Image 1 (tube, helix red, strand yellow):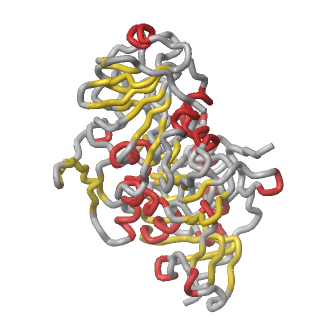
Image 2: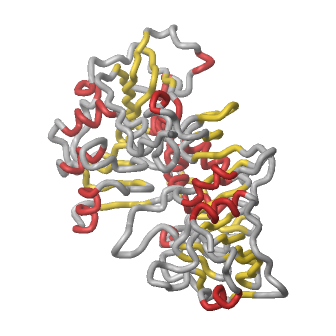
Length: 230
Length: 218
C-alpha cells in the first residue's frame, strides 16, 4: 500500500485542462506550495479551483492566476490579490463567492458521501438566489450541493507511506475535508515517514482517502500579516 | 464620543465568565484587550482554533498559527485545533455564545450588511454569513455614520445583505443601542454625546425612553 511518489511533478500527473481541483489552506496557511508551483510550471489551463482564498499576487494560487490557468474560482474571501480583482472585474475569471462554512460543509458532504446539505448561511441574501429553501422547525435553510472535484490537493505536517496524515496548528483548516473529497487526493507533507512510525491515535486523515503522497521541499510558509507583541 | 478603543472597551463589558466568543476583524479584535478581570472567555477563530492568545514575540512567530484575519497569533492554555467544517459546526450549532463583528449598515429590524459594495469592494463574505445566520447573540461594532456623514443605522439596508434580523446590540462612537422588535432602542450615550445628536444621526426608527445614562467604561 505504498502511495509515495517522488515529487510534486509526479503527483500532479493526470491533472488536465478544464478539471476541477480542491486546494487546501486558509490564506497562505497550510497551502500545498509544492503542487501549486508544479501546476504553474505545467501547461494546464481552464481549471476550476475550490479554495477558501486565492493566494496573493506572487504566491499560492495567485501564481496560477497570473499564468491564466484558472477559469473559475470558488472561494469565500479573495482580498489581497490585485491580479485576481483585475481578472474578475474584466470578466476573464469566473468567481463564485460562497460563505466559508458552506464551502467547508460542501467539501465535508462530498467526503462523507452525502449529496447535499441544508445550511442557514445566506438565507435572505444574494447567495440564496435560485436555491431551494426549506423550513425546518420554523427556520429557513438553503440546499447546498456537495462539491465534485477531480483532484484534491492538500498539505499536511506529517504523513506516512500509507497516506495517513497529521496536520499542524491552524494549517489544518480545509485540508482534512478536501483530502476526503477528491476523486483523487494528493497529499504533500513536510515529513514523510514509513508506515508504522506515526501513532494511529494521532492520525487526522486515514490513508484510505489519499492516493499519492510525497515529501515537499523548500517550504516558504509565507506570512500575510506578521503581527508581533512589543 | 468613543474612539475605536472605547467601542471595544464597552463591548468587553458584555463578556461573561465562560463565554466562547468569535471576534471579527477590525474593532472587534480589540475587544480581546479589555476582558474584565476575574472572568474567563475563550476566543474562537473560524479557521480552526479555540483559545486565541496574544500576538507572538518575534521568536514565537509561527506561520502555521494564524487567526481569521491572517495575523500571527499564539494560543492560550487549554486551546484546541480543528478543521473548518467542525469550526462552522460549533458556530451553526449555537455553541459560540457571542459574536462581535463590524458592519457597513444595520437596519432597524436587525438586518446587517457588511460584505460587499457593488462595483467597489467585492472580496467575499468569508465566515460572516455563517456567523450571522446562526449566532445566538450578535453585537455590532461600528461608527454611527459613514465618512461622508450618512447614517449607518437605517430603516432598510441599501447594500447587499449579509443576514436577516440577527443583530442584537450595536455599539458605535456615539451610543449603545439594543435592536428589538420595536427598532433601535437607545440605552446608553457615549461621554459628551447628546440624545439630539444620536437622533440626528440615526435614520432608522430610534426609540428614546426616559433618561439615557452615560456609558460606564471603567
